[in-house]
Length: 266
Image (cartoon, rainbow, N blue to C red; front, side, top):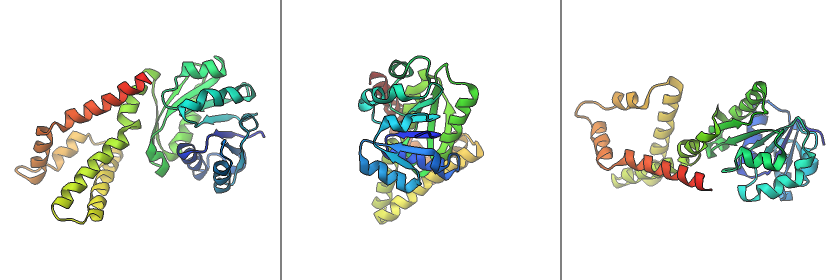
């Protein structure tokens, strides 16, 4: 089953990546095969994308140019051992398994393999993801550029050395949860002021989305935007002062570094 792209694991993240690549027109559906131990999962995704599907990982990876491993970290070793010998010698192997190092992947696949370790995040599911790309020494510049193009089909991607993966987890991989806590707090405040809860979530969520969009598209530093909306003796500066008094900045730093520490320990 020679294909350009083989997806191993049809969970939420693997599905989001495959959909982004197809939607961007980077790889045609007829050149993709998806594989999952759960027959219903691979059939569903194959039908949705219009590509081939299988439950046989060996069949999926054979002669594929790019193999994307999208299985949970606790299953990765046994899954990879099952198909490692079938991967073409010049194939690019991309892994999105959290906490799985290049060294561990090379131990499973071979030190001469071209391997890219990727850390995406949940917003990839709505084409707004942020991914770190970490290639091993065998990956050529044009090959990592191609992988970057694929991951930018559903958001943004940056090449990051492996020693900064913990920072990626802190700032991006785990941060959607922190943002959700912040949105919940904003909505709770609006509800306390009398706004219906559904409407409160809409206002809070759109404010967070719009702020991030403005910063990304204009390149404005967050501190500059904060100053722009903080009028003298106004409402916003009162809120900022209350956040500082409550230790919000330190709490966020502590939370993000706790995530990084946990990633190191995995």
